[in-house]
Image 1 (cartoon, rainbow, N blue to C red):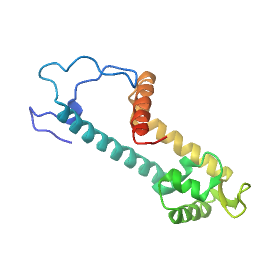
Image 2 (tube, one colour; image 1 turned 120 degrees about the vertical axis):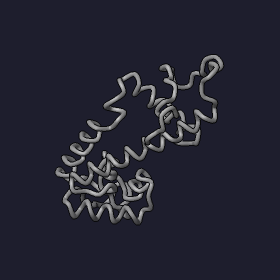
Image 3 (cartoon, rainbow, N blue to C red; image 1 turned 30 degrees about the horizontal axis):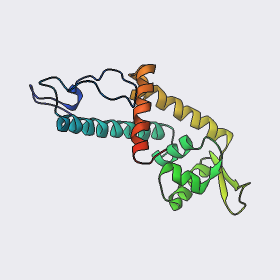
Image 4 (cartoon, rainbow, N blue to C red; image 1 turned 90 degrees about the vertical axis):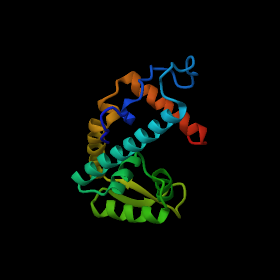
Amino acid sequence: MEAQPGTATALDAEPVPHAEPGREAGPARPAGSLTDDQLNKQISDVFTDLIKHAHDLGQKIATENGLTGSDAMALFKLETPMTMKELGLRMGCDPSFVTSVADALEKHGLARREPSVKDRRSKNIVLTPEGVSVRERVCDELMAQAPWCTTLDTSERRCLLGLMRKMLRSRGGR
């Protein structure tokens, strides 16, 4: 994201004082500050760049560990044994795609399928000890490099988490 001299970039937005999520903003904006449209555009630009950066980082870490991005995401989501359907919902993908991810994890010795205790017609995907080890390594590497971990202090991360949850709730998310 290169800018011509004298032009603003998305990273030039005015700093926002720490506020508790859910609290209303202060008084009207000072003269010369961004309009709502400009602010919203910059937020969209930066958010898109941040998502792309997080995706690229995840792909890089996955590749370094001999995995695809989908394999790494599955490992990240598999905190406990779960049905293939549940994993698909958590990954935001079609259940048929989860089958190929489970196949890849099994091929690498990172997971196995076993009958669900709740419903014997369903299969759970369960991490093997090696899968747990790789999951921990991938998660540790991600947290060591993720921009929210490397550039924000604890207070800022709490604020960010609250704001993200507030946005998700507004669309009916968790």
